Length: 103
Image (cartoon, rainbow, N blue to C red):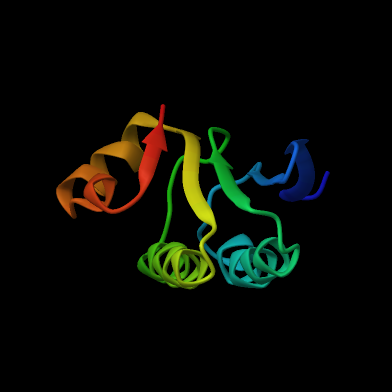
């Protein structure tokens, strides 16, 4: 099973489902998949982290980078689902003030 899956989840909405912890090799591949998600040109960009238990600083940086570019293109960006551990990290760095995070 691949740790990443792109799926259209609504009209004009594309979601990247992350089915892995984002450390090691999956963390490195996360950046590539975020670029694939951005390239879809959907108006709503969603990342589902509900199956992952951790994220690296590089992964957080990629979330912020794609969010910035999405806003520049008048597209929305949000995170659907994340573990308690990941959400705690997001709150510590106040990411929830920049990105909509639906738990």
